[in-house]
Amino acid sequence: DVKVTQSSRYLVKRTGEKVFLECVQDMDHENMFWYRQDPGLGLRLIYFSYDVKMKEKGDIPEGYSVSREKKERFSLILESASTNQTSMYLCASSFIGGGVGANYGYTFGSGTRLTVV
Amino acid sequence: KQEVTQIPAALSVPEGENLVLNCSFTDSAIYNLQWFRQDPGKGLTSLLLIQSSQREQTSGRLNASLDKSSGRSTLYIAASQPGDSATYLCAVMMDSSYKLIFGSGTRLLVRP
Image (cartoon, rainbow over all chains, first blue to last red):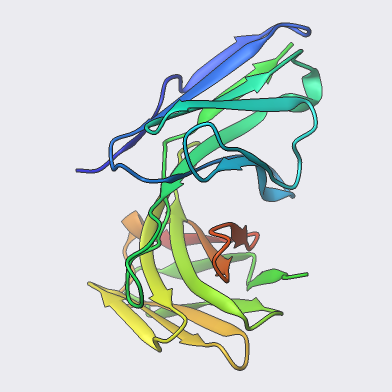
């Protein structure tokens, strides 16, 4: 069964800490994404990556950075955690290519609920 | 700018009912549309994906349709069960950017 694995289900961090959220996929997907989900705001894209060492800003990149040194791993970094970054963070991956009819669907991890105090 | 809307925001039905969840989008130039299920505090599980050239997809008791020209998709759940209780999200992928734009979801409760 294909998987996207997020290293932590729950995290509690202090304001000002540097926080690393890790995501690993075993499907050899080129694309990887980080979203955050908040009540009333839905899912919002933070960053995504088309390939190793490549990254693109999403809709809300401020306060975050990412790292993709290997194809299977995509890390989200909170440089200096703040209370407004308390949220559910969801990682996803998807495939490129295959032409008409190919499955470009996303596979999501189970999420990391981060609380910044 | 693409906007995705889901109606209703919440729905409560007795077990056994057939039900329809609605999703609409403002820009018809989509690559595909995907329906997800999310249980409380969990990640998203993909249910069905419809390519822009397709009209519908079926999986078990679930059937999703797509009318790209009118900017609408429906998720039909037959013979609902309490285990179907969850939030259902639709999302569209624009052209080849591979980014998904999500609706705000429909929270479904199936009462025993």
